[in-house]
Image 1 (tube, rainbow, N blue to C red):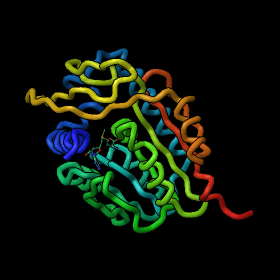
Image 2 (tube, helix red, strand yellow):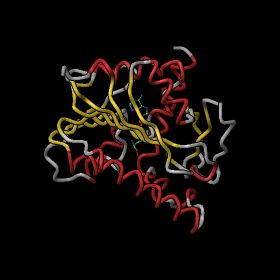
Image 3 (cartoon, rainbow, N blue to C red):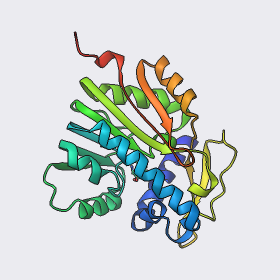
Image 4 (tube, helix red, strand yellow):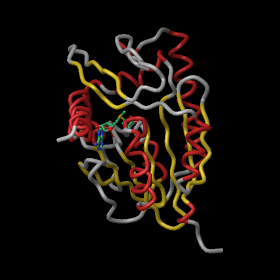
Amino acid sequence: MTSQDSLLQEQIAYYRARAGEYDEWFLRQGRYDRGEEANARWFAEVRTVATVLDDFAPTGDVLELACGTGLWTQRLARYATTLTALDSSPETLEVNKRRLAGATHIRYEVADLFAWRPEKRYDVVFFSFWLSHVPPDRFEPFFQSVAASLAPGGRIFFIDSLYTQTSTARDHVLTEPDATTMTRRLNDGREFQVVKVFYEPAELESRLRTLGWNTAVQTTGEFFLYGSGEHRSGERAP
Ligand SMILES: C[S@@+](CC[C@H](N)C(=O)[O-])C[C@H]1O[C@@H](n2cnc3c(N)ncnc32)[C@H](O)[C@@H]1O
């Protein structure tokens, strides 16, 4: 096993162990509570991305990669005809299933995205807070597998973190903006190494263009970047 393989296994283990406390990050609770003002800015920016996603309207057969506890699955589910939600953590998928209880158009699958290959094609592929956990040398293969998952005319939508100290827990230290790993801690103090790569929107957009993607990548200001678009190979014939 290479050192990168063990890092990716540690990343999987971290999110499995974190399943029950994962939402504290999104809800700005406990170690992620950054005070009233910063929390208010965070929630305002979440609303901005949610509105952009509503405008994008993820309809048809939708694939959500690294779906987590369902914070965005619940929004996708409003639009999708069918929704396939993948994650490597069974514990996390259990939280997601509870959140989406009663939704009969969602299929869950435990999958390691670095080994996974699409079995069918989708109208929309969505991934939030996942791209930053893909090691730099797996960026291209990852986007190749996304392109291979898209039906003709298919679209992608992604959300991720901007480099902002107050985004993460009070006891997490963001290393330099160009670092690719960081130490994460659970509430019980256990520590894990994970991949964390931050992107500049313009640079990400241009990198994707060289790989055949037409995407627009924007930010909400302080906390998030988001992008949407399609791959040129998937353009419908006129
Ligand atoms: C930062 S969370 C994002 C979850 C969700 N998309 C969200 O926005 O809240 C990263 C997710 O990636 C999952 N994950 C980590 N390594 C993975 C892998 N190799 N394959 C699939 N999922 C993985 C974790 O279990 C976790 O749910």
